[in-house]
Image 1 (cartoon, rainbow, N blue to C red):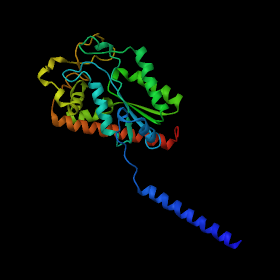
Image 2: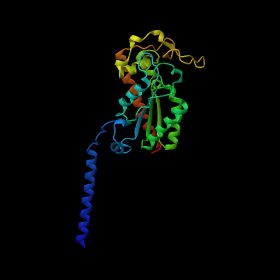
Image 3: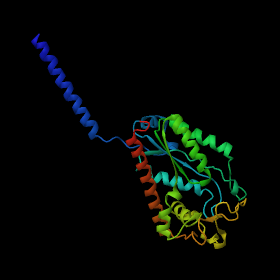
Image 4: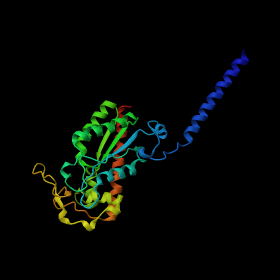
Length: 282
């Protein structure tokens, strides 16, 4: 009987030691990094291993196809895509494929522009966010490059957050970076102005065309409620009269790109931290 008790005690000690050793090894051996941060490139098996066990956050670039002065029509897609790639590792997120089309009825007349109706766009965008929640993401971060989508995305975010019990953040980067624009350029910005041109110049410098630029291509945005023209009269819209003209300066472009990305990453991390502290949908 005593031998039996001794054997059981020894076995218990061995099991405790083995468990402690295994736990120590698990902590000392770093988990392998994802082969990619882009959902487009992940196979379903790896995705299942990553989400939600190791990655709870997804970045969702959403933009538009519309004229932007002498920079790409796809600027509103290129900017949030580049932003997502720049911050994904810092915020431990995957990157969803970009929704490349948006609501831009006032610019539809210009060559190469594509505008989706609000009635078609809103439920489609909401379905995308809802499906990302269904896949296990707890934090859905919409990086929008196009202001015309914002109100619809805000409403979609609210519905998905409440229905699916997830946390959703919609980021308008150009507004978030307003003070950075004024710091770097010493003045306000604009649609396809100094700020947006610089950010995209840092991403695709070979597709910026200062040789096509003329100062008269830019116009100040109308004061709220003053007038409304369709199509818009200029593809460069200045936030303030006399300010925001593109500079095409490579050094400014790199500086602005870095500072904007830092600001976006800080916002995402701070927002998730506060959600977690509040215990929201944990």
